[in-house]
Structures are given as C-alpha cells and as structure tokens.
Image 1: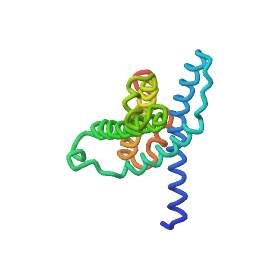
Image 2 (image 1 turned 120 degrees about the vertical axis):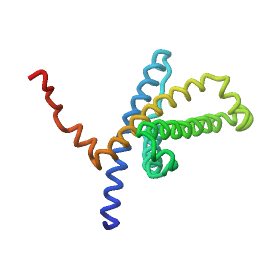
Image 3 (image 1 turned 45 degrees about the horizontal axis):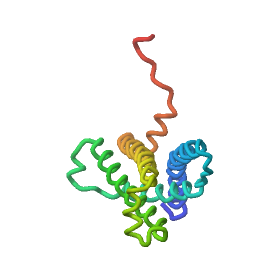
Image 4 (image 1 turned 60 degrees about the vertical axis):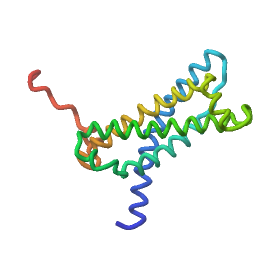
Length: 171
C-alpha cells in the first residue's frame, strides 16, 4: 500500500474518530452552556472542545495499538475495555488537573499553589464533569473498538447499517 493511500485511509479514520469525540464534547459544551445560562453567565469554549476532540482522537488512535501486556491478551474482551478506559481516563484526569493548575498559577502564586487551591474551588466540579463525560466517550469508543476487532474491519458500521433481524416468535 502506497503512502498516499495510507495517508488517505489515516485521514478518513481520524475524521471519523474526531467526529465521534466532537459529538461527545459538543454535548458536554451544551450541558455547560445550559447550566451557566441559568446564572446568566456567558460560556464560550467550542474551539477548545474541537481542539480537544482532535487531540484526543489522535492519541486514542495511537494508544489503540499499544499492547497492555500478555496477561490482558488471555482475558475476556470486557477486561480490555475496562482497563483501557480506566488508563485513558486517568490520563485525562492528569491533563485536566495540570491544565487548571497552569491556568491559575498567576492568581495563586505558582503552579503547586494553584494545584492545591484547585481542590478548594468550584473548578474541581468542572474537572469532574469533564472527566465523567470524556470517560463515557472513551468507554464507548473502546467497546466499539473491541467489537470491531472481533467482527472484522468495518464490522460495526456494516452491523449498524443492516436491518434488525426478525424475531422468529412474532411471525
């Protein structure tokens, strides 16, 4: 397979994964906007959500090929889904905490003071909300990825495009 064909396939896959995570982060954005509107607070962050979806898409696509160990290869598929989701979510938590600490470093007199103050502020609820929604997105992505590996490349798409089987008892 030539480089242009592989590049085209990679861009197609990245686009689909990006759209998936962009939908999840778009829902998160909408939730935040609706909650803050109740308090007459203007919220803008769609560009950050789109950049976050793009970065998360590429990172997850790369991590999908990282083996987690031989012990995991001999366990049930759901264990792979749970372990990957927990590991990816832990990474997301670290990034969110570092981001918030970096944002508040001038206000609190340094990075570590900002990180410590994060646990005393309402920003921690913002981190939890982001973590819960992104973890849900990662769980579903990992689940679909495992199903796709079992039924073949493009299997989930083919399965979802087929009509539902008729129940034999209802005929």
